[in-house]
Length: 293
Image 1 (cartoon, rainbow, N blue to C red):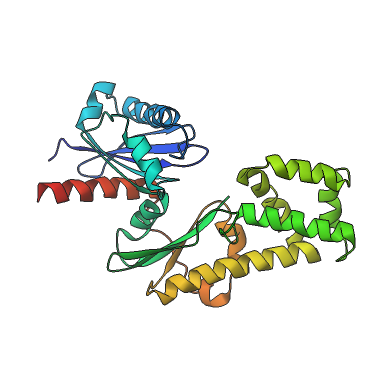
Image 2: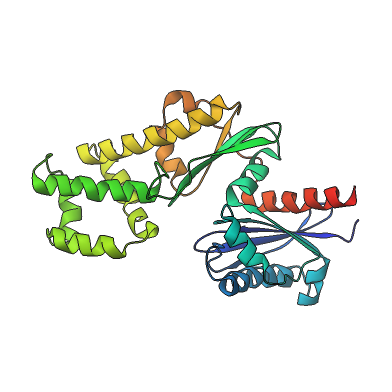
């Protein structure tokens, strides 16, 4: 048992992180790679994963041949889509074992060490996940087009919609709407052309601008951030109703939006025990123990 190696991988849409620990939990090495949302081309994803793994191995003074000793766990963006998981696993992996789950699941594993609780992820997208006694549920997270309330993408989408209202005279213009419309030369045709090509991250880049203006009491900024916080509050409240005793926040927009969350939700927020990468290591450990018994 003492010569076992465990690797955790946190695979996101823009980059992946890898962490290598020994059986006692001692940190041996870490690495990073490129985009690893598993809805992407499997060859691209595996290249990103192995780049991160090789960096972690190098820090540990190990070689690529040692991959076959490693029990790996991965929390991946896109892993909620069964077809995406099957497509990734159609490529042979180099590890002793390889377990894959959603990034929400491994974040929850890390946050509560597999115990009772829930997480709220707030970044370009948003998602709630957790429960009690291992009975976990997803709340939201179905994409910004129809879900992901309170996310960066949803905030940016709402901003542009409300800027159109201001342009039309349906609501008062504010410094925020003026600044955004000026980017498009105050021409809605230019804006519509941009929307036709925009991806979630393109919308999400407007979230810091909205938060900045909300902090200055810009009425449009306050309205959008308040609406975003209400959406996140509804996700969190559902998780609490499902029995979660506490909530951990994850994602780049979690802390900026935290002061805007409903007070009953804020009172349940706690610090995570560990991050999603260590959650992925726990995933690999638990799977190995299950096979051994």
